[in-house]
Image (cartoon, rainbow, N blue to C red; front, side, top):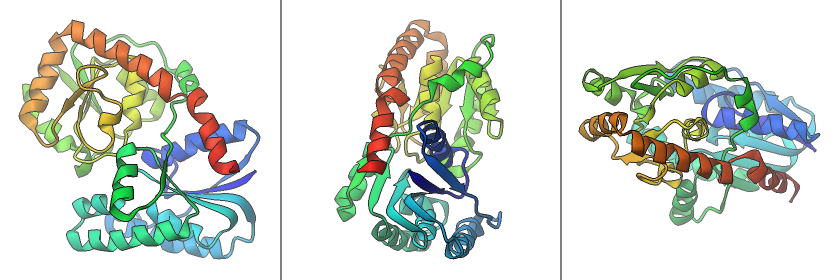
Length: 312
């Protein structure tokens, strides 16, 4: 099959999800191209400029594709002008809610209208979270296919063996409001350990830091289903995360990880300091989490579902 992927970037979050799927489909013999679109690197202009430049690029693109796959709402408006037999849109999280939190209620209202327009453009809709799937179904009766982001366990073969660092807590993610990094920094002086922030390291280096840590902390205000939690599960690093978005789909409290309320510094601090000294609970969490991720989120489990999405 000839497939075109459209995304503002192909790293981190949904862009990283797209890149990993593209790599796997190429291994299966499919021709997958990534559309690279420039944008203006200013917060309020990133998405509008991406959409504008992307549409211009689509209008001059004369190629015909079996499938075009847009990886977020702005990408759908670029996808509209591509000649393809099937058009697919994937979203991580509820787009209008994210926009409202990051910008304003007025902008969030405009984003709600953009969602509806993007869904109309698409033949198929997918999301990596059952929570998001349920939200859109109940709110606007949109039919989303649940298709989680896979974990490519082979990539971990290149991660160096690294010595554990006593009482190391790691944060992995963007340095941005929705990720709650400011909340973690607020309690950092009272954490009985050392906090390491990985906000812009290469993936391999980030995984080395994760592997050397005792706890991964995910303090987000909003999420879809963070890939880094799956990575921690595979590396057998206990996870503490806020109960937002689809996090509770993979973290069963005190079974595969620890769930805490969002924007609650006190409970976050208590959870971190308690888990750092509870080696028995750490062992229970990491073993359960590893078994869970290997059963449901590897390519062995998910590749047939991706192939079915494109061929049916």
